Each structure stands twice: as C-alpha cells, then as structure tokens.
Amino acid sequence: MSTETKTPVALNLRRLLPLGAIVVVAGIGFAYRDVFSFETLAANREALIAWRDGSYTLAAATYALAYVLVVAFSLPGALLMTLTGGFLFGLFAGTLLTITGATLGAVAIFTAARFGLGEALSRRMDAGSGTMARIRDGLRENEVSYLLLMRLVPAIPFFVANLAPALFGVKLRNYALTTFFGIMPGTLVYTWVGAGLGEVFAAGETPDLGILFEWHVLGPILGLCVLSALPIALKALRKGGAE
Image 1 (spheres, one colour):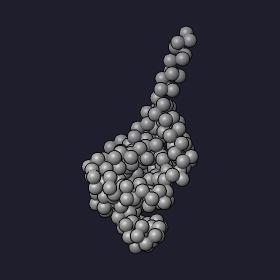
Image 2 (cartoon, helix red, strand yellow):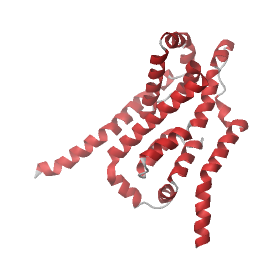
Image 3 (cartoon, one colour):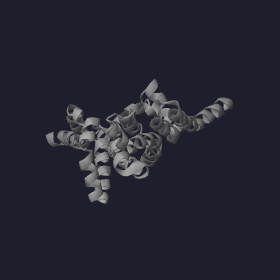
C-alpha cells in the first residue's frame, strides 16, 4: 500500500530534477553576477585573443557550448557573451555561434520545463482564464507568429520567452525555429558592437549597449514585429467578418 502511494511522488521528483538543477545553478550564477562584466572582458582580452589564435576551432566550439550553458541555466552575462562572440569571431561567425548556442540552450530549458512540469500543469493552463487563456488561445491559433513576436519584441525577457511556451504545449520544432530566427536581429546588432570592441578597448571606453533602442536599429526590428503580427491580424479580421 505504501509503495503504491510513494511511487508517483518519487517519479515526479525525478522529473523535476532537471528543472531544479536549472534553478539552483541560476541562483549561484546570480550570486556571482559581478564576475560577468565588461571590465572582466577588457582585463582578459589579450589572453582570449591568444587562445582563439592558437586553436580557433576549439575556441569557437567552447564559446558555443558556454552560450548553451548560459541560456540553459539562465545565468547572467548573455549580453557580455554576445559581445565577446563578436570580439573574438567577427560579425558573421560570432552571430552564427551565438544564435546556435542560444537556440540549443533555449531548447534545453524548454525540454526540462515540459518534462518536469508535465501534463498536470498543461491541464491547469487549459482550464485557466483571463490573460493566460488569451495567450493560450493566441498560441494555438497563430503559434509561429506569436513565438516570433515573443523573440523579436525587446521588452520581453529572454528567460520568459524561453519558459512560457513550454507551459502552453507549443511544438518543439516551431519553438526552435522561431528562436533561431527571432533572436537573429538583436544578436546581429550586439555582435556588431562586439566586433568593434578592439577600438573601444584602445580608447579606454565602454560600448554603447543602448544601440538596440536607437531608431535606425529599432525601426527595422519593429518592422519585423509588424510582419510577424500580420497573420494574427488577418485571421482576426477574417474571423470578425465571418461573425
């Protein structure tokens, strides 16, 4: 009798282990967040360049893997990592490595959340109302468009965009593809900033991290947001006309 009642609990705890590990590591990373700083990058830039020049393939693979871990465990320093990618590998390679690492990390945390929280939370979300119900219904009707908007809109924290879709049962394939392409504009901008860090270091200055919110950069991103939202608007218009 006691075995039957304890087994489901044990199974649930095992399912929660990956998500629990993410929370613990994220907490440790937050406690040491001051280590991930522009000053740290500036102080170690020569050693990093020497490492890259000595073994480019190993450095690129290590960078991509480090980005996977930063995203998967929600560690601080993702922006600094993106700048470092541009600084070490240039605009094209840096952007590709960052997007690949970030996408794999996002898929990892998505999978851990879905595996750990399971069907019980999905059923609770299905029974929800209000804002949660509107998000759920929107994702079900326009999954790809909603996921792209979550990635493109700079106001939505990356951590939220990673976890929320797992709670609403979106398809992993759509999640991965919209992550890869949705984070591309912002990643491209900050990798571009990172590619110019050599001159910034030489001048003893700090990079302009607010460039993403300047109109000549933000405008095209907002344009992509409008394009992503267009299928949602058209479907809503058709639905309204049919009624």
